[in-house]
Image (cartoon, rainbow, N blue to C red; front, side, top):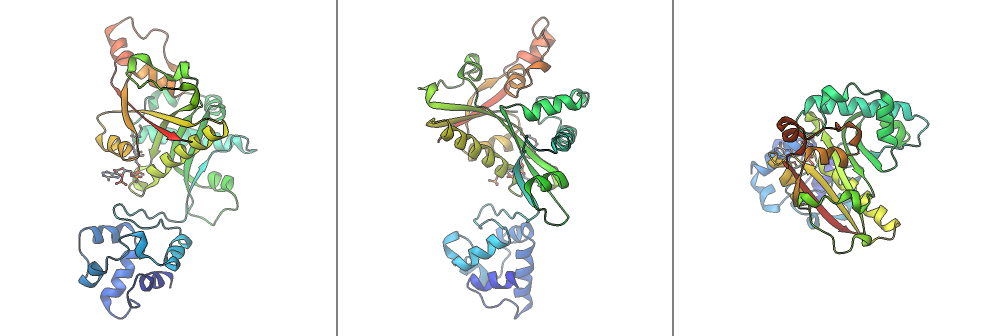
Length: 315
Ligand SMILES: CC(C)(COP(=O)(O)OP(=O)(O)OC[C@H]1O[C@@H](n2cnc3c(N)ncnc32)[C@H](O)[C@@H]1OP(=O)(O)O)[C@@H](O)C(=O)NCCC(=O)NCCS
């Protein structure tokens, strides 16, 4: 019914009068499948002419409200991002009475990510799997670390965000670390820009961005980054700072990733070493004492290979 109403709200007849009309609604319902059809131009002429939901302004207020009811993101092309209702993006509450469960879920989700995406992170599965739960708890509860997750639940609607996090599968995450002092944030040899007024800003390091393979391409990765940026901006405001500077390190060979970050306002900001990445992520205790005595050690820990990117947001 709602889908039929959306259809009508977009300026068409009720869409059920002919098989193509019904087909249109079904495609709509299937989200990405509909998007593929629409973007490929495989639409009936009457839909193309009308520019079906091709821009926000074309939609009536009522239609927009219905999208919100369905928890679909307002449509714009490209891209179409359809977020089903059972994804929840939330900051992990470190003061929770169910912290041990959250810690275990954090460890399991990160290990799964490392197994699935060995080149996506500075740390490796073989090392991380050896850590005791106490280290994972230390990471999660460190006052400078904020972990944001996407939980997916196939069951009934939970009462609270915490319940959703505990009951659901963690299929995505991102970490933001800060506010960081200028002395540790600034890496003079990396070539990163020097701020005019370091005291006027807060500094953050974003890492751990991940969504599991089957849930990619639905806008969740970008939503995670946006959530992290929002938190950094909000905290800068609370600290009476004018700006929030957010930096990340990534593998320059991952061009899709670099393009995604650029599209979100990040700019290239120098080159980092693996050692710097470990420290920036809060894992300095995992860096061996000797990173320089052989070519192999230097090549591994001290080579300036990682791409640093950053953006500065007004608070
Ligand atoms: C990077 C990552 C988090 C993106 O997750 P996602 O859920 O697919 O993200 P989104 O759906 O928000 O898509 C983000 C962008 O990725 C690109 N993208 C997503 N799916 C794509 C695909 N199948 N082919 C090409 N580009 C694609 C698009 O540029 C998209 O931007 P757009 O919406 O403007 O077109 C995910 O691919 C991942 O976990 N990769 C492995 C871990 C990793 O490398 N992390 C980065 C550490 S720095």
